[in-house]
Amino acid sequence: MSTVRVPPVLRQEAGGAREVAADGATVRELLEDLTLKLPALGNKVYEAGEIRPYVNIYVDGEDVRMRGGLDAPVTDASTVVLLPAMAGGDGR
Image 1: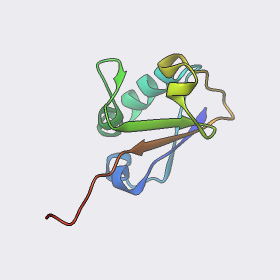
Image 2: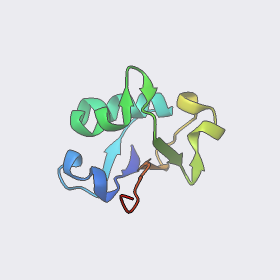
Image 3: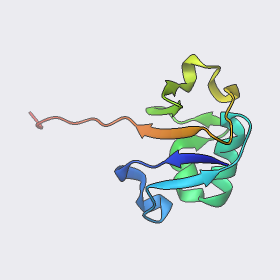
Image 4: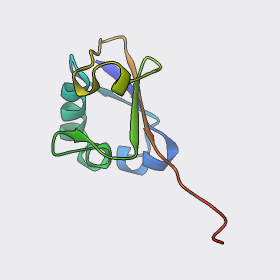
């Protein structure tokens, strides 16, 4: 099982966990497993077989979009980081 790091903005959907375990040989399989185990979290980052817009996923420090997208390999020793984009401003 791979370790999936959950940023503070998504921890409520993960039951408050900083890290969760998910299984899969590819990013797609891992996200499918994550969605089955924690539907609220999975649906925030993955929908209809695609990574949601404005969500970045890193496997062992590398953006999955540079490693084959959803077909990027994941090993049991991999650390996967979910990173939704944050927008902000001062409201002017």
